Amino acid sequence: ENNLKISINIDEEVEDYSPEFKNLIYTIIKESITNSIKHGKCSEINIDLKIGEEIILRIKDNGIGCSEIIKGNGLTGIEERVDKFQGNIIYRTEKSQGFESIIIWEK
Image (cartoon, rainbow, N blue to C red; front, side, top):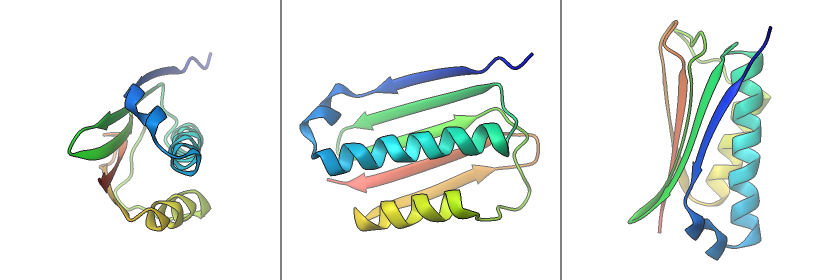
């Protein structure tokens, strides 16, 4: 049995942004979900996009996590896309503590 629970909380203000930026966000979310399932073997993913002084996208899973991040095509692709829009990425993970990506764009 493989039940996956995804909680999504996206600030509606994202609709005011360019199609390119929205596409970037959705691509990151899609890629992160794929990574969480494939590598993290998680059962829950929380996705949160807040728009305030800055734009913050947090994606956290409850998967197996890792002690060392090995960047495959998924994370590398996300980083290249985020760079194009001058964003910063922070990863937080520990073995058996899940995996979290925090992406921040200055406005």
